[in-house]
Amino acid sequence: MAVVYATLIVKGKKSFSEVPDRIKDQVKAVLADLDCPELAE
Image (tube, rainbow, N blue to C red; front, side, top):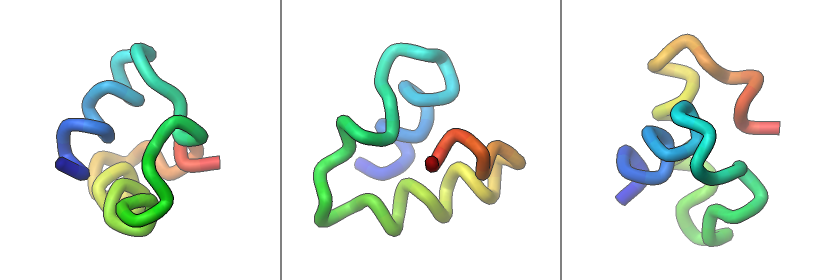
């Protein structure tokens, strides 16, 4: 699920604030792996 949210954030469909709290750390890690850590702010 974290990869799905990260993909939606990269595409501009969702923002990091819309990610459920329980998977925010995982989404942040995926965004870092995609060289987009700035999107996790």
